[in-house]
Image 1 (cartoon, one colour):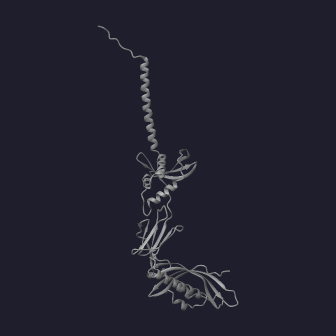
Image 2 (cartoon, rainbow, N blue to C red; image 1 turned 180 degrees about the vertical axis):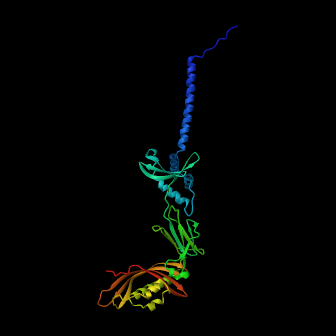
Image 3 (cartoon, rainbow, N blue to C red; image 1 turned 135 degrees about the vertical axis):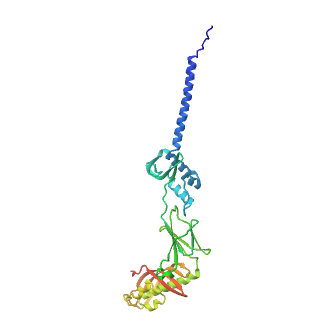
Length: 351
């Protein structure tokens, strides 16, 4: 039987084949390693924060809120939150080498992170697990609570959200009237990222609104009643002058009592007030009289400020001048105006 002759593979071709195999295997391993590293990078808190920063730079308010997982609550708006978020992230540069990520406390599944720029903490974030990675949200501070007050019956909206419930109480300055006092509603509005936009209506008519962002208060009034305001202003002036002249012993308590609401702290205090301390004089006058901030607390209730320099005169003597400031609450009852309360400001003799 004839023997079959075996062919031998040249050593060079075998070596080249092994080299190709090892190269392919190495490339595959590198691709797998690169993919694993890329997948790891995409799953890190740092990547989530950088992605949020890019969205803040280029995305819409809606995209930014979606990336951070923010949903408007209460009277807070998406636009105000997004504005606050962009403000908090505005100083962070795109240069990755200048950034450092500092892991903080863990709260449940969430982890706090601080981002430092050139070694200085610039922003803080809350990281929550999402799938195989993380969701980053800026840690923003809300404004202090706003206190909103309005006369009973006035409908108030904050950033387009109607206020409901609220605390019912007598209007300031009218507490001594008991059940007859005009009522006000008071709400506390929390969670705001920007000063609120407040509107108020009464029976479809627009009401004036005053917002004080330093004191974080909003006060709504009743619809403007120019005739009622003018009448209240006239009585405020009359009451302020009579009070000052009562103190100077130019008006008796019997006269003053005609314009006082009965059984109030003001009425009882003035009834027993000793008025004999003023210097003897022959006349008085009211210089620089101003009536300001006349606001309706109810259909027949108003508050206002009256100021003047009360000048006491006597021939041959230098005039005595007393800067006077009164905050007053008045009501119209049975067609007559009455003074319910009066708070005294400056009442010292000017030099």
